[in-house]
Length: 281
Image 1 (cartoon, rainbow, N blue to C red):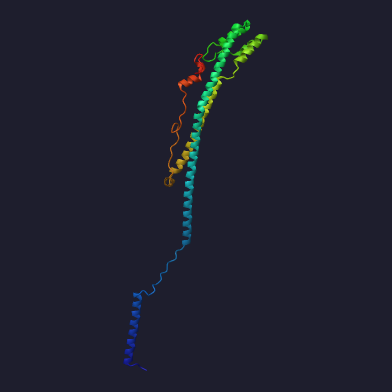
Image 2: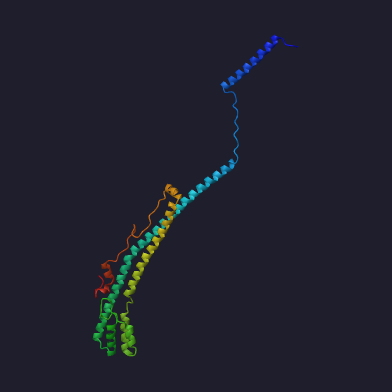
């Protein structure tokens, strides 16, 4: 059944109204924010988990290297400080022992000087008061002229080689040989030789200086390793931030206790027999 023009007009008006109503609803929804916004889908990045794992491993490795280098700096610094303490101990040992070694040497020299002087005087008195056989007197005179005397007392007979006398008198036998043997035993009584005492003193002083030189060499080697570690690229920046700085090398006389000098007066005391009979002061 065909619609009339009136019905067609009514249907058109109804459609326009519905369209206007829907449009009004859309405008109101947009005005009050009721329209749901379209969701944007984020594109999935391939290998993101791998990148995260690699990043974490890299950070952990970097932190581990930093801690290792800092501990390495600390170890080198402690080693250098320990060897510096060893050097100070060696220097202090030299300071403490030097005076004792010199005094001991002087004491030995003085004792030997007194003993030899006393023995020489007694021998002279015995020779004057005793009537020795010509063989003994001649051997003593001959050996006195030929043998080197004790330093500082030329001609006093203290340097006589009594072993040679005994050999020369071996054929004589009897009381003469016994008397010569007695004199030789008295002559060698203290068994303290100045030359041996001085050599021992020099050896002790040399050992002290060698010990100090060895300790200084060990210290400088530790300082070299430490300075190389804190100044090499790129760790110099880490060392600067961490407070590790370059340190000066140790040199003889650089802030250390100076070595003791043997002055002229002390040297004269060390050779008391070289002052022509004067004992040590």
